Amino acid sequence: MKASSLNHILNSSISPALKKIAQKVIDEERITFDEGVLLYKQGELGYLGALANYIKEKRYGDKVFFNRNFHVEPTNICVFDCKFCSYSRLLKEKSEGWELSEDEILEIVRNYEGKPITEVHIVGGVHPKMGLHYFASLIKKVKEIRPDIHVKAFTAVELEYMCRKAKLSYKEGLQILKDHGQDSLPGGGAEIFDEKIRAEICNDKCTSEEWLEMHRTAHGLGMPSNATMLYGHVESFENRVDHMERLRILQDETGGFNTFIPLKYRNGNNQMSHISEVNTIEDLRNYAIGRIYLDNFGHLKAYWPMIGRETAKMSLAFGVDDIDGTIDDSTKIYSMAGAEDQNPALSTEELVGLIKEVGRHPIERDTIYNTVTDYMDYDFALDKEAVS
Image (cartoon, rainbow, N blue to C red; front, side, top):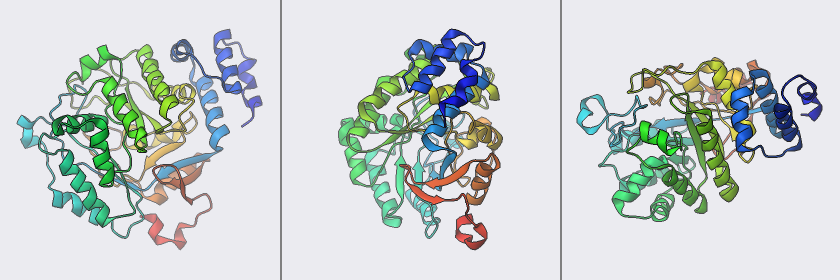
């Protein structure tokens, strides 16, 4: 992607401050906190998309990544009471929740034996009776069934509670899980790092510093992770930039984050349902600014089950280079909150088709972004296994 593709911005009538940011993008210079806020307040959709797409294509051309994965959600019983959550149920609301037994969880894994799945994503509510040693044993048994699979498991919120209950340091707890087969961490539970906002929407779970420290510790043990940001509720633009700034600082320190995943607040069936959801334009602006601001993050993911397939396709012109995976209808976290896609499953062929519809180059990856299969010229008719 040539810098000349942004000449129309530099020659346009936009403010000198926005032109300066565009020049920084061309020169690969880091933008400041104040410039990040300016992008939110003054950056129009076309301007932001041009900058974000320039950065993305300079790194990856027209490639878009996805993986073949499935989710296991052991329980939605949770000791915490996050106001935005439509998924979890307190222990006293057990009649509305679920608790999978170990045998039920392992049976889910066995159902994928012989299938070309590369990742299992294990997250759920924070159940008081499902502790660190229980999950360490579970992961070991998962790996006995599928030694080749990458286990991405437990948000920092779950891990903080596990370590606290087990009276172990983060390093000790994570080392036990790693020794039993856990490979990486998802990015959930970050929400918004600003302490005042956090006190309003999720006051009883781990702090922003605890979230960051858990990921710092994981990176130090050689366990990569993802990072998220829940946007579109009561936070300000300054809160969003502050959140990304803290992630950028930690990534400078450790280099351990694989991808950044903006997560749209969905207002169905929760204690914040009176708050309207942001529109698709704001979704796309937010992706673009994430790409521009987080210059040290390799990848930017649009989680298609949450935003829907059409918005996911549009996001590929706004800096996004990853749309997650096949999911296989196994996650309820966003469908219960009224997400666009109530049956979140796409076959590999459908995902490849979605990416090709917008003129992009589909690449199946593993969890840490090694190429598994290049699907640009792939003939599914010759490989029935690939359709699943």
